[in-house]
Image 1 (cartoon, rainbow, N blue to C red):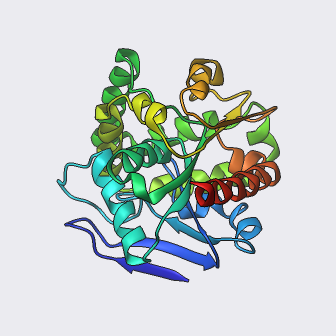
Image 2: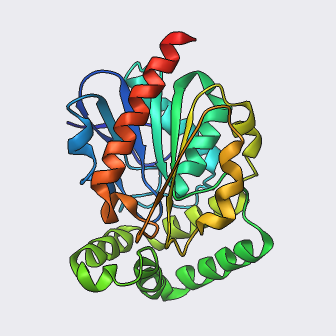
Length: 272
């Protein structure tokens, strides 16, 4: 079932909800939408209520001159949780989606029963990454949207995956091209301005699962590995021959790991 709700002055928030039982919410990365989880959702909805939103600005509707922030995006996810009267949920969050999930955990800790961080980090951008985002914004807003998307998408996958699965590369390219340039730029700036949220992991009362790709070129796992001991309850998986897109490159294993972790989170919650 596809639903929409109003949130502030942004275009309507759209999300899919299927299944029944305790809630899992899947948050996609950049530049993607709810469709990113299409190979994972069917394996989860027999056991859980699965909610898959389009994050704010991640659609074909322009946000105009609205200044987006990761915190605003977290508030939007909380609004969906409120609309569905969710007492809590396991968040499964990919890349940019994990930045949103960590902000949600900071602002609405009662909503988070567990957090799966898929190919992401709790750290803020360093100076080099910030400068790269600024250059991307300039390119996007000056007619280079297509060039930016075409350069970015293949780099999301492990070497050789694009040659074996050109249809998936084309699909991700098509989704990215649906974004208005102003939305792409606003999302880049929101990620650039986000703060370090490693303290959220240190203070977390909920379990945290980490999914790494051995061949992730976007957020190399060796740069993030030191974060896996910050929370009190940590689960770590390293996927071989996988880049930044486990939900497409290794959906069977990711689905299994999400199910096992979500079952643990719900058992853990009952013990608290």
